Amino acid sequence: VIFAGELNVEFTHPFFVEVLNSFKKQMGVLGYDLIFFSNEKFISSGDYFARSVHFNVDGCVIISGQKMEPTIRDLDMSSIPCIGVDLELKGKKSGFVMSDNFQVSSKVVEHFYLLGYRELGFIGSAADSDISNLRESGYVKAIESFGLTLNRQWFVHGDDFFEPSGYTAMQQLIQAGNLPKAIFAASDLLALGAIRALKEHGLSVPEDIAIIGCDDIEACKYTSPKLSTIRQNKERLGILAAHMLYDLINNQSGGGSFVVEPVLIVRESCGSQLNT
Image 1 (cartoon, rainbow, N blue to C red):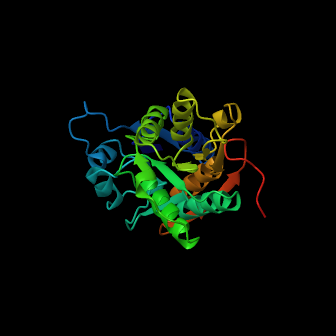
Image 2 (image 1 turned 30 degrees about the vertical axis):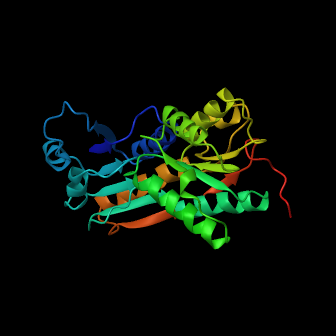
């Protein structure tokens, strides 16, 4: 039996690689093989549904770090079973798994608040990134719920979730002056890029600016300072996606959704002593 996965993110991104590896192992246990569809520009049609029919796939996992393409939405609404990872699907034969992105942001703001930080900034991915926008919306809501002042000048965005975008976004904040006291980055790689920019300008983390990332990739443990982050249970996301897709393929469920609770991992980049 053939299984098709559509991947709309870079294979080099540690978060998606770990989720995909977990998914692949579990699908292998369940008796399925994987083929991959990409959205590279040299592919003329980009019609994922037509390609799925051509390869006679049993189901699709859809991983999309940025905006959902119309052709992905067409696949979601088709008769082919689909599971989205960090992507909300709405088709009759679809389901999705994701971390609770509002909880992600709430945990960050609560921790900053307890540490005494009141001037909070945000570094996100592209403006059309669904996941980045969910985290930003949750962040704004949490800031307002704590009665803090929201300063949109401290909210900047890169082109993606990777380190160079975090570096460029942080440069924008530095050049604008009047920096916030703490920043939440929508991914760990964005956070690491921001830290690199701060160091180049002689600023220290967390002494001058505290930073928390998101994903808890392996590199967080080895950076200087070690990066505080929100851990998403990548293995669980992959296993859940596999079992949900298996059930859809075998008509044992009608779709649905699972939201996995995130965990705050406190390391050196935001301090660890709560002002309680």
